[in-house]
Length: 446
Image (tube, rainbow, N blue to C red; front, top):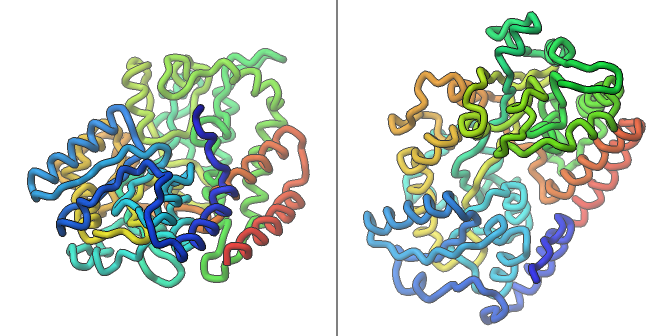
């Protein structure tokens, strides 16, 4: 029987237990199946590495491992560690507490990685980055806060990231009398376009111009971030949820529920397929606009190649974050007690080079962490990728709620949103209650 994934709160509790045990442990953990060997202790350029992905992503990762080994003579013991590089099922924590951690982990869950760093489960990597010739000035500004903790030390190295944008159907825009050359840039313009694009006859919904909580719009922090909320102040360690920007974001979401009836929207969306399905509503003409990641362009190419579409930055209110997104970032980390952190960081920097990431970027239109774009990237002049780069470089783009409880807070905010949409509950009161609850959780971590 498969192990049930731990809750975010459960991960936080286990982290404290494991770190306490790690201080007392003097041997390896015989219960972990991390397959870490003695390679790292016998050679300066050899190390153990955990990665979370299978399929084509695993094939690509094994390719870059082989390439690095051929170029450097390093020996890399690579271990497939789903999910999230062993972060969300306790496997990594178990290896750390047992004194048998890998030297390097890459994960698709930056929030859990940040939580590990906040609780002392990761090694600071500044000296290893410096020895490898790394310069923080070369990194896009939106990634820097994720890399550091409040002590100013660096614990996380981003690899690459996804960027969310507004996708819209050009033909539907023109049919509705909208100018596809001037997509909505403000929330007011988004609402006007959504109404013009919708086809609703009584209880029958044929098409909705926009559903704010569809696709990437379902992400817990996205709309609050766009509206200008910060969620958490890292300097004062204060949760900031009862914030006017967040109140306005949830009240705006509720306007769509009130206009179209949340139960009718739920019924309308019940038959929708996922992004990599021919039944996705953007492909079938059921929605005219949606917020999704850069990779969605590849899904359109595969499942709906005849759609004439374009992308634009996510619309924002006047006092919100313009041309912004929350980043979906893959990250590298060195667990506490790693035997060969320098070799690990050397590979992480190699694996983050645009020339190495090019295959991946040229398929999915992802971004690297670097300000300068390499000639190996083939999207020069591509409207989608031009927008990806524009949004990624925005000073308003970043990673919300950099705190050890970011994952738990995300789950709570999703539940709160649904309470507003489906039950029309008072937003400010719910946010105040949640702020107090989350602040108590923060103080438990200190």
